[in-house]
Image (cartoon, each protein chain N blue to C red):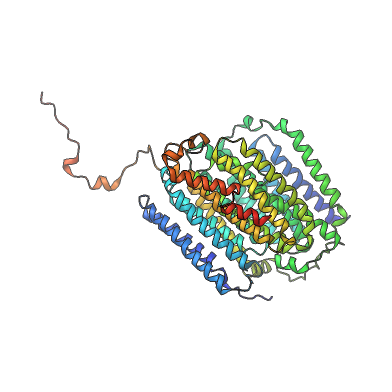
Length: 197
Length: 402
């Protein structure tokens, strides 16, 4: 057990604990903040896996941009905190039991002897001039171009879906119709009839 | 690095659908609401021309073509599935049109999302790696979630959409976990490479099986078979009938193609192992699907349970595949006939519904013969076909499976 192992376990445990806290935290804002911590720990694990560029992108894009927006959304929604927890205690024993059974079965069937460096040897270390970004870019736009394009289409479909769901027809809105105002004729205007008393 | 230029002409249907989706997106913004028929006709024209493109490919490529660095395959299965998906989607839009006009959801987004989900199905049909399978599935599901929720005035539809979304996200998680296990054990996500490996070491096999169980769980979730069937009746009932018509038909064929690729092409050597899982799923689906369908008073829910049972029958075909010379084709025949029959049944519901009422309770159908003898007769034929009464196509599908 050397220093790298220690770092790995620190990040891994932080990721697991914060991931658990995302689910059980009472305050939704706390949940979002724990999710930020999860992403951050995962970025640490990715750095240990020598995926530096992806780790930095995870921190910059997810933690920096996506989660900040998420936080704003959660704050604006003002979710009722009590109603959400209904049934949590009732279902907890069953959920815990199922989880234990499934985890136990997985451990029994594929125990630690199936993993490790003998089963899956580590890739050889790269040279000093190894460029992570260049390699990633090279495969992203060649071997994985098809998948890359589909991911772009998914984003487009997401935009269409979001607008389709959120957009409502303007109704009960007191807005001016400029064209009609310009095209008005004198005989269409309201006339003030003086009281001839 | 060695990189060969992909054969773009093989992926012509997908490219065409995507380009047309972008064009329709722009056209729809400018034509305005009164001319929603323009969007509708453009979408239908797209489907028609894509069908012709696919049909031409069927003759042009007699041999299987694998391109895009092993992510894309064009073989008989892919082309046939695409043709069926396009035909059913065409009729789904045509039958659902009156319904969506009444419900005021006949906006550009409805047809565009439909087109995107069709693109997802096409991608699934010719996916040759777990990566593209997953991406196609997500494109399909994402569009379907939104289509279910498009009827914003209905609380039932919103509830159905949320349920569909949450269970669908869970299924995606299971699928991804399984894929990551398979990738960890073999070091590849491409089905062709997995096929070439053929024999795995015992340690590898255990991890692959674990991954395969999760992949199957995710696929069964999306398919809607027991034990992951809970979302099916709620979603089928809550969704607008035109969308139910769509969900119940074309995606089943695409999911069948994906299941064939994963089980039969990627892991033929593990046949005995995945057979055990599918046997249990198939038997439970047939049992619970048929049993629970009896108790329903809502026709849409009843058809939902019956779809669970039919998925069970279809899985039987995949299980029996290696043991008989026509097992897979029988399963394929079964799933296509089921899809046509189910689409017909939901189309009748959609045609009978009016703007102010859903025509989906069993009591609503009392005396249909006097009001609309033709539709009543068609419904009778469809129900006979589902049950598998001899002169109808459902009988031949079940006979083929046996």
